[in-house]
Amino acid sequence: MKKTEVNNFIRLNRNFLYLWISQGLSVVATNMLNFVLAIKIYERTGSTLAVSFLWIFYFLPSIIFGPFTGYFVDRLKLRKVLTCTNLIQGTVILFLLFTGFKYYLIYPIVFLYSFANLLYFPAEAASLIWLVKKEDLSLANSIFLLTSQGALVAGLGLSGLIMRLFGENTPIFIASASCLIAGVSTYFLPKVEPARVKKKLDNISKFISEIKFGFSFIFNHRRVLFPIALLTFFQVFLMTVAVLLPGFASNILKIDVQDAGPTLILPIGLGALLATYVITRHMSTTRKKNLLKIGFMMAFLIFTALTFIMPFLGDYRVIIAGILMFFLGIAGLFILIPAQTMLQENTPSLVRGRVYGTWGFMANIITLPFLLFSASIVDVLGVRSFLIIAAVAMFLCYSFLDKMRLLVAEEVNGNK
Image: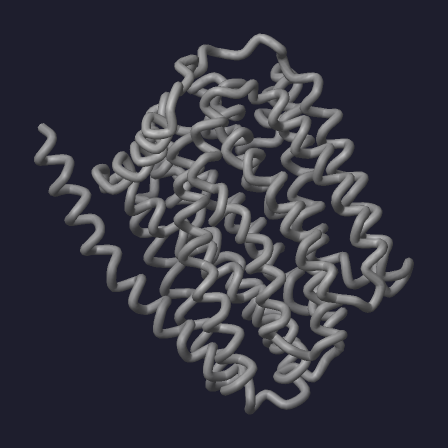
């Protein structure tokens, strides 16, 4: 992905630029909120379990309403969905200014923010394919991925520094402004959209059958099911690491939790940025399975090192932890990018909204018990016990990849 190629693509695709601005600002806002709220809750409670409830309330709307999002995204105007959800989120974020030291008030506000976000994700995915030519889709995805990692660095890595320099509420103002500007940006997308599903349902049984279709399509197509399984695992992995970081910074590294951003999260983001750049340049010549295996093996080795080597590093543990986090960011993207590409390549356009909506629902259902489990492990048995479990999980996923390849090949051969 050359700089001139990217510049020419963005210059000639103004509508992509509007969506890209919205994506970048939305990710900055979400990551900034994630860090600030997790730090606020941990500082007031000292409990990893209390931090995990932040994510539980974030995922709860998807569990309740998630199965219905794909149905609406396949029928609503994408431009209106993107604009309205951004504007609503920007307004809801401002409610956090009135929580004070009552940390429990954060949870319902996060619920509202997540509820508004339910339609945004599948609408953004569907819009990218609408606004970009098929031959440019790979480049557009690469730009989106690089932007996501850059926004992660900005949102998570710099929030602690902003809190120290300008006050703990400043990131909240920045996140709210980001969402509002993102909403204005999507307002300028074309009003004329490609053909959507026009059929409306006249009774609840047909509505339920539409929802069931998303599930049946996923489970009957292994080429869609396995990428979704990998992406779900990646979400679980990402959320559990997020829950772990305050306790890891405080109990293992012995640093202030506000310093977890530049010490731990910033290296993760930089590693993810490097991985995104490298993978997008070599994706066409490298097998996706090989990238996945590298990612899982790296993650296994990193968690093993954090468990058994970190206690003996003394004054060097903060530096070594930052280096390991950098490589953990690389490992994560070696899992995310191939799995996401596989899902996009194997999902037909007419069912894409339902597939993405169903995936979001399934992923959140699975993530919640893992969050509670990991938080309980950290609070009761300590951070090191959780790291051992994480290392074992990464090795099991690495071992599963060959079996996955054989099952997908069996389905392909059976369809011929």
